[in-house]
Amino acid sequence: MNINNTFISHLTELRVRLMRILGVLLLGFIPCAFYARELYTMLAQPLLENLPLGGQMIATEVATPFFIPMKVAMMAAFLITLPHTFYQIWAFVAPGLYSNEKRLVFPLVFVSSALFFFGMAFSFFGALPLVFEFITQFAPEGVAVMTDISKYLDFVLTMFIAFGISFEAPVFVVILVKIGVVSVKKLKEIRSYVLVGAFVISAVITPPDVVSQFMLAVPLYLLFEVGIMAAGFLSKPTPISDHQQPAGNDKME
Image 1 (tube, helix red, strand yellow):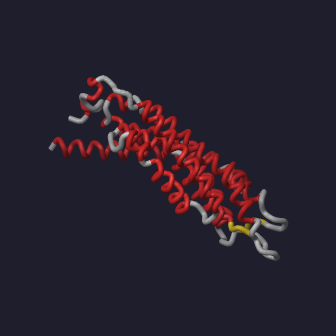
Image 2: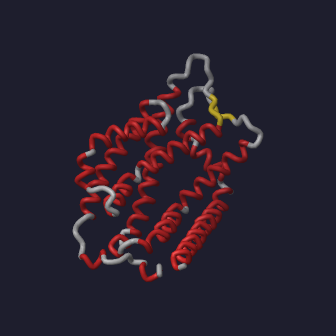
Image 3: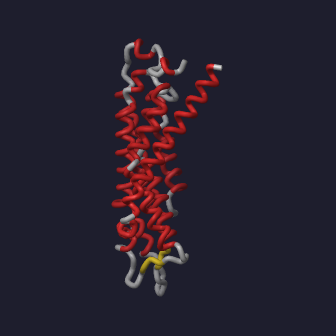
């Protein structure tokens, strides 16, 4: 009976956390919606700056000029509220962690948010201009480059998500080491496999051009090395008393 009550209480808390995330996301979307057009124009700059003479962006569907800027506004709201989203996720997980692990919650929330933003910024300011410059140079003579705004948004979102998640590599490494799934020594032994895996992952989730694949694979591997260093630093021995029971045991009876 206690197990059932605990399970139901976890589901209730999960629902509350999800409602808070959605509520804050909606509050962030409302002001962004008023600047949806400006946000899309800013988002399209990497392509617009590299279009050949006479090139332009088009909308092929009737409702596309309205819905695509709204999607961009929603994406902006998601980014603005991302720290709150990460906090709600970690707050849900924290009661089941040990006290020394619980102390990592706030640093990990901050670092996770910052790394995701850095990944997107690297994609927007570094990768996308080079990718579009590389792609548009191969347009055949007499072919007008006219990209659909919905296709462009899908492309950019794919790149943002790919780079944002890839830049979370140090966080993933630290978590895996802290929960005992893998050791720092083992991670050092599989460096060569991780390097190959980084290029395989970049080939799968990025467009089929060498520039974007290389610009994702190299930072991904370097961040893996950063994760190893961080995990080694954070894995120093701690007093046994910190590991005797989870921090949230008193709430889970």
